Image (tube, rainbow, N blue to C red):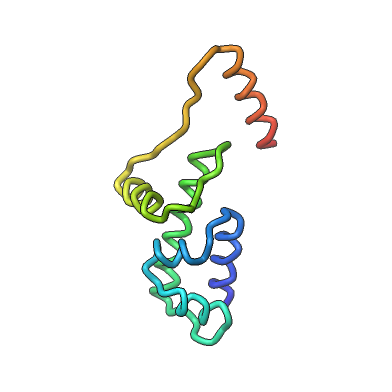
Length: 113
């Protein structure tokens, strides 16, 4: 149950609802719930698969920083995951007046520290 709790903690840190994760991971919400409660632990291959998806989701979140990722539309997230797995990254780039961009970059840098 250690792996299941680790996955759950990472989902919570990303504000990703369990039902969205289940949809993205192609695991039934019932199966996920039973695994979390220790009633039906995940198999080794299931843990590996779910861990890969979590790692990719965390990558999406890191790429989008300082902006949060919304997990309201699983179809969009699934598309972003597929693109990421094919080597495509979406990274926000600010465009606008140079003075404002520098202020934003300074705020972002200080928030990371």
